[in-house]
Length: 161
Ligand code: PNS
Image (cartoon, rainbow, N blue to C red; front, side, top):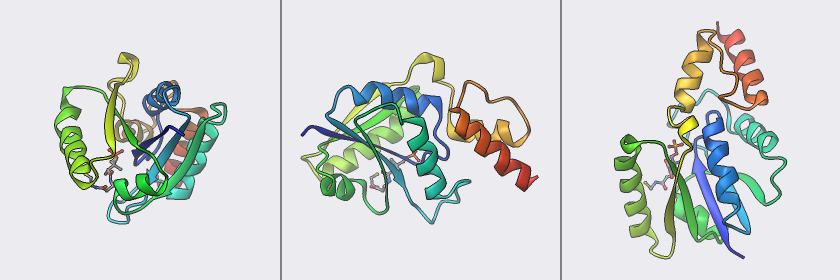
């Protein structure tokens, strides 16, 4: 089975992520969307909340598995028998960090390849951080994130503010 893995923080998932998921799911028998559980970062959403929002957002795509991981991505990829890491590239500014991660992952496991998919220009300015910032101050995020994320962000910031 040809298995790909699309890792990220997904705090929260945006339509930019979904664009990459939808397009890369066509390249594999199975695509695993892997949410990093990293206690050192201070995410807005818990891993469980992030998993729930992703599952709801990808429910119509048949060959997707959604899971979380901690530790090294290559270890999780090996565990899941995924041979390809999928990353999205929005702009040149993403490139340097992504190159560093791809080279490090290749050094850690030369059997696992990283491929890059260019995010649709429609979403090239989008990031989880910018969506959170706009939502925190009451701006409109319609069309930028799936409806479940819009709802969860509103609830989260209603509680915070
Ligand atoms: O959405 P993000 O925060 O840009 O995703 C970053 C992620 C999760 C892909 C990256 O931090 C990662 O793979 N972390 C796992 C730890 C790891 O394997 N580090 C070594 C490779 S750089």
